[in-house]
Length: 296
Image (tube, rainbow, N blue to C red; front, top):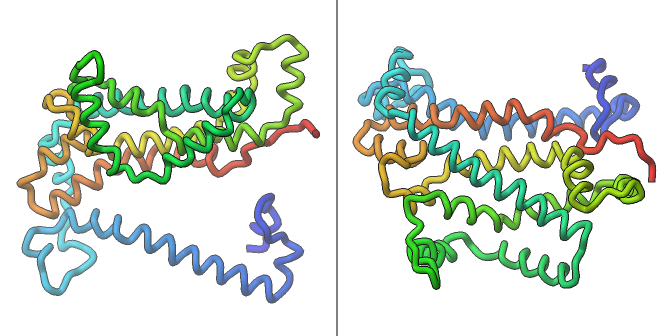
């Protein structure tokens, strides 16, 4: 453990602090607290996974057990065959692509405009944008549905299209706020040097800002993928064709009459891609966001 403390480059406790008995106690109390929090988050997931292998009478037993009497991985194959995820997976990737473009590209441009360009009225606009975050999503659900099913002036029904997911992702205020705060932390030296070299605002954004923004892009990518992958209400309202069903909607349509253990195992299978994505992006998310060598 001491060797691990010596290798630490981040955090509030250093090797010199750790030599104090009081700090050691605080350190292990914090570790114990984090372990409890981790178990609180993991136990329901593990319980659902193991319960998916139980038979129905075992699942409803008044004296429940954690581990099933037998584990047959053939159930996973049967579920994947019954769900027919092939087309639904493609549809979910299309929804993710639309959401990613709106949240990362458009959201990044909006965050850069508010953070660096600061046009007239941008402060007031930003305050109004933050105010909209106070509105619950359910409050805007009905007006948005009425808008997309009978678009004003042109009176076009955008159901069974990807337009609601593409244009709807342009106004993700939370992600714009993340971009804005991140761009505020980038040293002005980069931007000033680029301007002296004759770089335009578009060039600064594409060649300087975005390459330095890999951590926040990775973070928002995880958020966008998780929200679009788990999004049920959006596809349920706007995608009425069975051929356009996403993974979440296909899971709902297929598992209505399944037994509870089979439903739990199917839900766990759907959760796996989000876990894999976080494993690949966790280094960018958790790492130091600004390992730069320029001093202000």
